[in-house]
Length: 295
Image 1 (cartoon, rainbow, N blue to C red):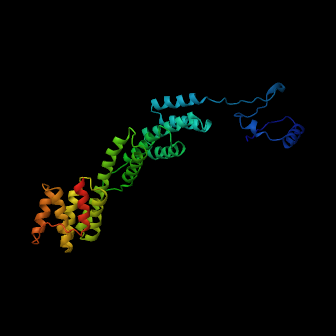
Image 2 (cartoon, rainbow, N blue to C red):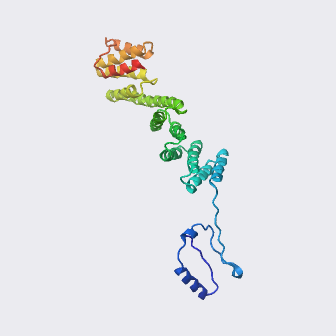
């Protein structure tokens, strides 16, 4: 409730006014609508109140669109937010939240776009625009994917959201591009695993390196890094003296990529130890190899 001050010409008037205020009942329903204070007017005039008129939802929404068109993203988001605040549970509120997601994405303010998208999905899971909101959320993470030398959590989140989009809305017009973006994200994640695996390999930490190369084959075997991962496994296992796994990795590499330079290098590496590529059926790699054959 606003506090209103008035000046009176005598102490007697001041005391009377204070007493009147003390016994008068509060009127929150009226006071909340007042946007300017009372002022003492000369000549015994009454106090004047000013009430801010409600701006229609469509006017606020169109103001937001105009600001968006002018690339004034801050004011556009503010207008759309006012629609949500003043007209909750209305169709205008839904439209405004959708445009908030788009506005923050275009700005770009990707974290804010994801937050708005999460609210939209929670409030309107069956809206015809929900697949598009999923797509914008996925793209918000996808556009933040850094180079492979840095943390790849954005790629993982983009992969997760695009996967959910495809699962929930398989006939959506955004599915094709989401699948493509998932392929790029997987390749990025595989590249990160390879980068870390090679680091361990140069440090002769072979078990740690093998775990990374296994992850590439187990999670990202459709990426372009599969061939190198098999070669690196040949290299790491051979260095550890686990020859059956080294031979199996080279054999699977040869079965799937017979013309690959990585296979030629793996074959040559085995020959230095008097070995040949051979697939041992009890190897974990042999099971992975069968899935590679099917791709």
